[in-house]
Amino acid sequence: MFSWSNKEGKKDPELFQNVSEGLKRLYRTKLFPLEDTYHFHDFHSPALEDADFDNKPMVLLVGQYSTGKTTFIRHLMEQDFPGMRIGPEPTTDSFIAVMHGEQEGVIPGNALVVDPKKPFRKLNAFGNAFLNRFVCAQLNNPVLESISIIDTPGILSGEKQRISRGYDFAAVLEWFAERVDRIILLFDAHKLDISDEFSEVIKALKNHEDKMRVVLNKADQISTQQLMRVYGALMWSLGKIINTPEVVRVYIGSFWAQPLLIADNRKLFEAEEQDLFKDIQSLPRNAALRKLNDLIKRARLAKVHAYIISALKKEMPSVFGKDSKKKELINNLGLIYEKIQKEHNISPGDFPNVKKMQELLTVHDFTKFPAFKPKLLESVEDMLGSDIAKLMIQVRKEEASMPSQVVKGGAFEGTMNGPFGHGYGEGAGEGIDELEWIVARDKPTYDEIFYTLSPINGKVSGATAKKELVKSKLPNTVLGKIWSLADVDKDGYLDDEEFALANHLIKVKLEGHELPAKLPVHLVPPSKRQEQN
Image (cartoon, rainbow, N blue to C red; front, side, top):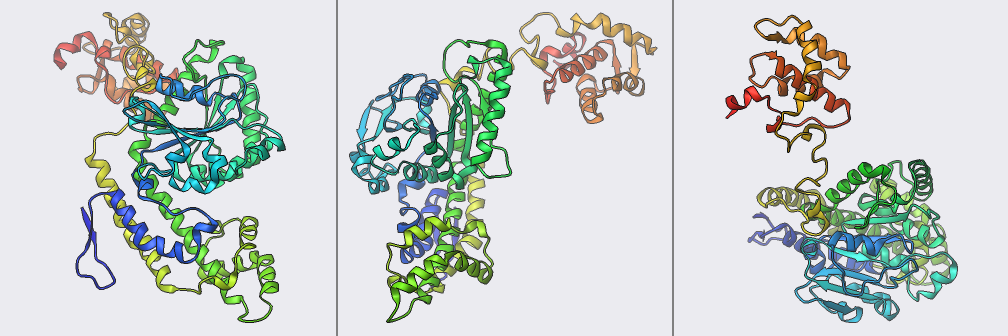
């Protein structure tokens, strides 16, 4: 628990029981007044509600039809969900929010947007055409106890598809993108063509690259050589649309519970799936930090928006020539941006898109815009400069006090324990289930080298062992760790078993595996096991 003293003269400090409560209070008391005064919600994003701060982390799946979005959800949960349809043709024609519920069933969109406990109330602005294509599938699944998943309609190509939807598809996705914790773009290894609508969607998600991950699905259906070409083509296509210097993270695999058609890249697919699962599993732990980050982004945009609106109001004449002046200001909006940048020392990246802003401004009456109100902006500045820093400390405290929060159940359980866990029986884990010491297989070879080093009393010194071990060409930092693991009795010397162990660990590292932080029990030399016990 922590407090902020209220700067408006109140003696009682504000108390916040948790981060969620702190975010809600900050938004209501400091940011919302600025947004409301300067019509922020008409231009950018609807007002936030309590459910936006309380809801579980959400994962948004986006992709062209038949890329495996619905199958991916089915794979994660290992369970069908209400309203699920899978097929090679465009089957999912609705937005489906897959959420946890004790009773299995479907809640239609119009009922969903009036439920104060669900974070979807502001979607009613997109009208019946959208709400008729929006449902919530509830089911009792352990995966959904930690996250919610949003399935989206498959994206098709052609102008007709865009028009026939009856609602702004890209705008709906942008609304979700602002509120979700992870955006997963799915591509089919067989069809990488990015349609006009898909390109428009990716551009609409432009300000959320930090949440974006790419999955190249169905990669088991092509050979290794083809996969390399497909991967290169995908990166080239994305590079033309996502104009950032960073390379977006791409996960390659076959995300469904069926045998691999071409198993040549099995290990690659397993490693990629494990990395993606770890990324998704971390979402509950980082949810508070993500909400804090999104609030900061929103506050920075709201500040800039207030400067823009007040600048337009200031330039408007009081009596004559209002319409002509409005057109002039809209046409010169880029110059107004530059003026505000210099005057208030604001980064160009904080400003909204000029063309989009010009389109929205045409339907507004500039004379009704409010003038500059420094107190509202000072309140937001205080929030960003002081309150957020204190809330950040509370975030760290909550993370430390809570048990490790990860997504559990479904496919996440299948690779956690047992012989099918990722990397089980490989690298340093090789021989874990065997009665014989795994190093003994190659020990005769290592013994030949050991006895050429002229051991004294059955042991070689560190200096002597070093001359042999450096022949592996591994860095000293790695060899130092290997020495620490192999010198089991910590006497500064290696006997024949410890020397064989050191060479075994070198072999593990040279084969591309990581070294263990602590020597596993099955690698402890037989003669040293009783000593350790």
